[in-house]
Length: 179
Image (cartoon, rainbow, N blue to C red; front, side, top):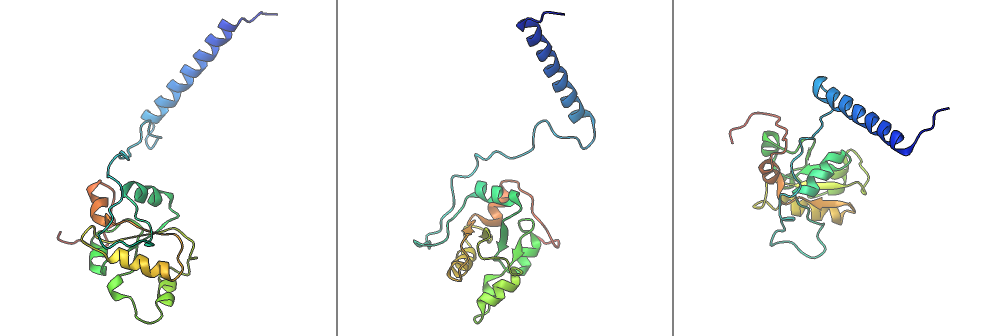
């Protein structure tokens, strides 16, 4: 029977770890479509906190910054609503967003309209509302309406599509537009 000392065991473990790492990194770099060793994500150090408009009031839904918006989007569980007109929405929007143009909201049965637009989504689902950016307050007004109607997890991304593009994040284009 062979007597194993701790230095022999340590050397064997070290060799196994190094061989495993070499095989893993080799596969990641050599196999097409392999797992990237270093991700291609932007730094989350951008942005200086949420943009809050002068028209914000106490009790408004919370304002979020680009970092929170990106994280919410990456979960795939948060609904993104673009409050701009359909023409702007179709030119470029955050991928997967729903267009609910604030300027076209009905004066009667707003709750039914939103329920249809959101396919009966429960009112406690995370929702991020945005428009074009700092000069646009459509997201603020739509968020206030939704909060009033009982949507409990509404957030406002006031930096909007302009900030999304500024940080190099992907946009969805439904038609080609002159910018």
